[in-house]
Amino acid sequence: PYVIVCNHQASLDLLGMVEVIPERCVPIAKKELLYMGTVGWACWLSGIIFIDRHRREAAIDVLSQTARTMWRENVR
Image 1 (cartoon, rainbow, N blue to C red):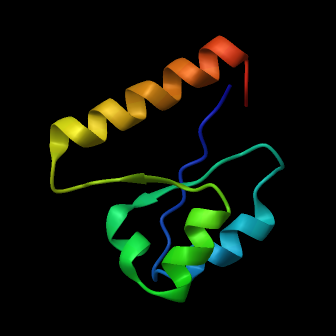
Image 2 (cartoon, rainbow, N blue to C red):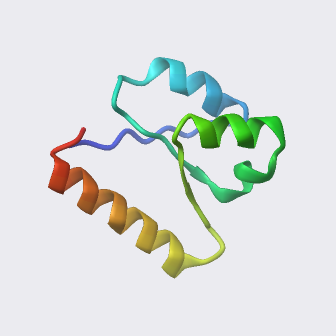
C-alpha cells in the first residue's frame, strides 16, 4: 500500500486529479467539499474519503480506519 499526497489549489482540482491517479486509489478530501452542491455529490459518489480538519480526533480516526482497511485487504 502507498499514499499519494497532492497539494491542489482549488476544490475543483480534486475532480481532475481523480482522472490522473491510478486505479484502486481513493482520494481523501476535506469534509467541507461534501457540502459544495454538485461537486460534493460527485465526490461522494466517486468514493472519496472525507476528513473533518476541524476535529482532529475524528480526522485521525478516519485515517486510522482507512490505514487498517488498506493493510487488512492488502489494497493499494
